[in-house]
Amino acid sequence: MPRFELRRQRVFLVLAGLFLGTLSLLNLLGISRFVDLSFTIFGLEVPMIVAVGVLPYPITFLCTDLISELYGRKRATEVVWMGLVLNVWIVIILWIGGALPGAPGAENVDPATGELIPDAAGRLPPFFEIRTLAFGAVTASMIAYLAAQWCDVQLFHLWKWLTKGRHLWLRNNGSTLVSQLVDTVAVILITHYWAKALPVDLNMPIAQQLIVLIASGYAFKVTVALVDTGPIYLLVAWLRPFLGIAKDQEIGVGDRPVVVSARS
Image (tube, rainbow, N blue to C red):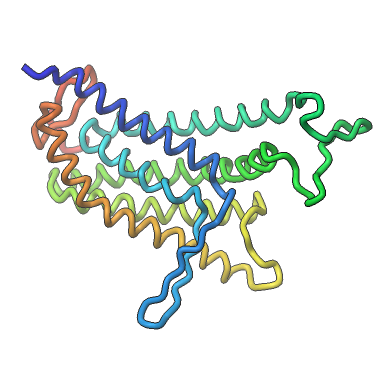
């Protein structure tokens, strides 16, 4: 007889680990580089400039949607809050790493002030550049992350209740598309107005540049969200029998399947 309880624990560990690992990766990469994914369609050039940290971000929504579908809202919300704790932990480690003294001879330090001296190109050691960018990215992403992931989980279960557990494509795409819009707008605005870290030309209209960045990031996330509809159907169809849960069930407390109630 299959050991369903062990499978359920391991699948949850994989999904939560992938979610948290991806989250930490994108916060460290964050706005360290912007990539140009612009393309031309019907002779019209469509600008698409996205931060490298955006590239793995849609995976986090795929993971929370799978956890929501298979394990329920409570488990998904717990993972979201753990993501916030992870963000805080990253900030603490980066702060400690910059506060401790560097190894002798490894960094140019002003003996009078104890401050780092930039090199000939005006740049600080790589760690401190990453630290500065990460602080701005993490602050913006923490606020946007909480708002977006909360929207994702709540809307997913709202549509699951409204459709009585049918139309997985609707709750998967509907929750993700709205939450990604919330996330993209919040990250771009906070990163620009608080961290001053976006690649904008101050001699050009700022609003137009911010709109391009928001539209670019959101278009990328929407494309990935629509593409992952097929994989999430396949994964749910495979994981339900693998985990020993029926279509109208979720894995509840104690790793035992429970029937989804009207308001679950």
